[in-house]
Image (cartoon, rainbow, N blue to C red; front, side):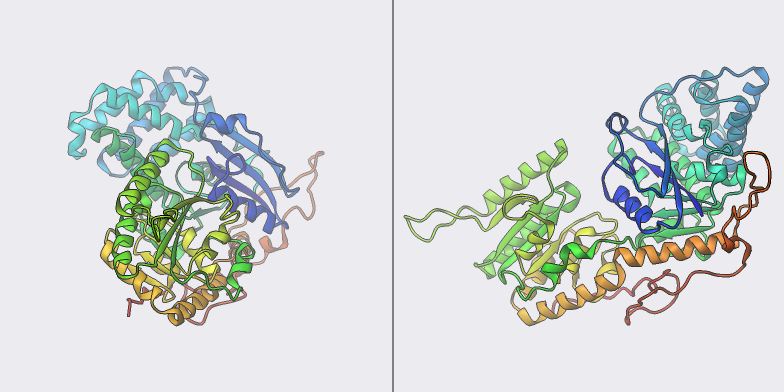
Length: 554
């Protein structure tokens, strides 16, 4: 079948977890054809050429959201009245949280399809006056009473970018109309072309989210320092868009229970939700995971991106308490190369704190001083590969205050390491009963759990072996591909696109549709492997979300 793969700011132009997952998907499901529809988010992506793609990727069509759009067509009086009515419905829904969002959105989409693009209209004085009126209607959020012209301009600019997919030419017979299924690699703006493909062409929509897009938008608005009225209107837009996306999607696949809860909060029907964990390449960690070397029994390791959300400050304070009771303990912090100003500043702050808490130590007056805390870079001499970082210690620590799906925790599990993690994001779901979990922002609890494992080699070995077995059961690329292979077949069997396929001469084209589209029934199996500790339904190909079990330090 032909899949329209919808991406936003990632595949095939940008690296990262989302792009890597898309690459594995198109390589692993080579029996299908993929047309990629990519939204670009930066000038850097505009300048980059995408890497060589496998033959099953027929083509890549892209649109840029980072730069101002051309004004496009100028609408006549009748079209302007149409625009005002539909945009008023959408704006009222943003400001009051009421109904009318879908009617406004699809009305604007119909207008763009019939009479050309909307960028100029969405930035017009009419749009600003409509937004202002929506802020004054009874039932509007109280914070909107103080909206200013600057606020309205900021909202209009962001709405124009977010709604730019309405004006694209992706919905014709040679575009998404030719797809058997639209698969959005995230929610939000990426799913918007899928909503229109369903409306215009009847193409079913599958939405995959490994992190709640609406939550990411809420956090981004706060970090950007936007005013309260702007944040309120943008939150209304993204919340309404998420609700409509979940309403129209045939299947929604959250990557973990944390994302699933956000989706349910935004109105997703539980019957549509299928938890599919992101797959990771276990082969990279086989040498460490199957080695008899359990690592230095006195060393803790931390691996990941160095940024404030990882709360290395709490980890350093916890390690100070550990050193008081275990003077031989060491902490090795392995960070990915830092590329942002925020990361550089935070790393310098952490180094300064470590130097203050742990002065260099020397055995005697003639020895060179050494520090029990080291900051190292993945790819450097001590850790050429990620697996080498985990091999350096016996216990892996995750100290984050914010997490989605904890990739570094799964890597440690593949390496067979005992772990101590903070209870954030999907940590409890991922670790199950194979590691210790403590509250975030609690250095004392973190220290106690680490001490418990440093002092008990047998327990470390048991937990490490159980963690590796669990990771191999639940978090491999193969499990992920098995799940989506089944979902694709199920969707095409239950929601086939009914279209007449013809050749260049207009004659009916035989065998244009897969046989599954003519056979009703469920095609999703239970998966090749299901771990013994998982029970229930809801997880395609691998059981369901594990129970919240924590093993306290004992």
